[in-house]
Amino acid sequence: MAKVGLFFGSTTGHTEEAAALIRQALNQLEEGLVQTYNVVQDPIQCMDEFSCLILGTSTWDDGELQEDWRSLWFELDKVNLTGKKIAIYGLGNQADYPLNFQDAIASLAKKIRQRGAELVGRWPVTGYEFTQSAAVEDDHFYGLALDNDNQSNLTPDRVRTWAHQVALEFGVYNHNN
Ligand SMILES: Cc1cc2nc3c(=O)[nH]c(=O)nc-3n(C[C@H](O)[C@H](O)[C@H](O)COP(=O)(O)O)c2cc1C
Image (cartoon, rainbow, N blue to C red; front, side, top):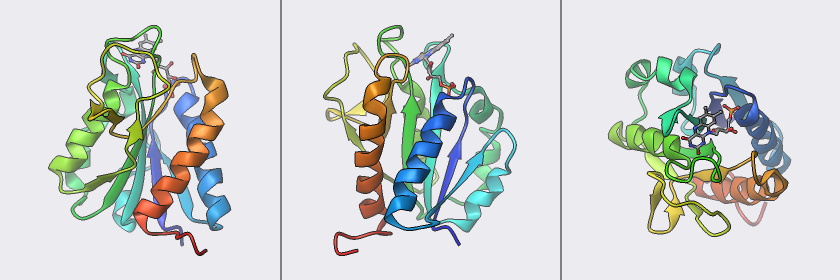
């Protein structure tokens, strides 16, 4: 059985494409490590099966969560997240939304911390140009920030590096493997 559940919400497909890349990168470390779920159709109660989760969201409407996450926001409170290790990734656009770049990552990070989960997978802000983001603390995003509108060429490398980091932080992979 997969050790990591990846749950994403995606409006125009970018967060979904990134989910496939992340799954591919992690499954290269260990076959079958990750199973992906699209929250618009798959029940989020499936999160109960995993002690390690990856959550993916894009940011919309000047800092809002992606619409499918918004719809199930209160349902999330029924899932037991206590003690789980959770990594977040986001899709955003730093050129058009420099004041709200990747804010939705912050909404998810706040929620999962309130629910007793441990946040892993922080990502440095170097290499991006934006003015403000709710998702930044100590020069790091709360999770992987991807911008396929302006920096799609950087996405594959960012995903590979982050996937490796997250696998180590989850403890599902070590350097000796
Ligand atoms: C109307 C609109 C509002 C957006 N608002 C934001 C925003 O506030 N912050 C941000 O970083 N990106 C914003 N974006 C960019 C999207 O997050 C980006 O295009 C993303 O790749 C969409 O991913 P998805 O197709 O998986 O939903 C916005 C895009 C549109 C079209």
